Length: 83
Image 1 (cartoon, one colour):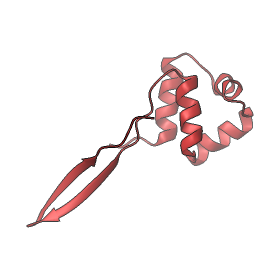
Image 2 (tube, helix red, strand yellow):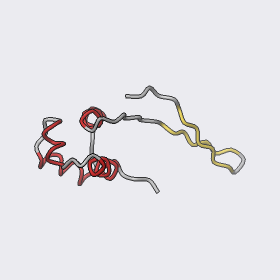
Image 3 (cartoon, one colour):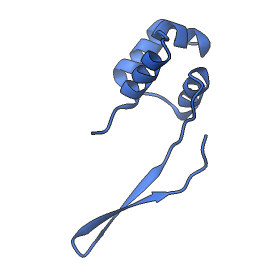
Image 4 (tube, helix red, strand yellow):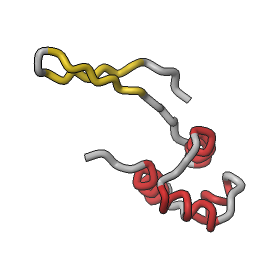
């Protein structure tokens, strides 16, 4: 099961005992703005970097390529630098 980015952020907040309001303040956003982004699950890469910095964790973005060959699906992780 894939978790949405919002769910991942909420889990990290819970693990860090941090509120949405506290996160919002750390990254210079309003509480309302952050609540809306979490509700819509809509974040730019720069916002994710700011959030990961505020939560003191590493953000790792990957592209996974799906190849179909002889009736099989093969997934290849394309290396990308960690952010």
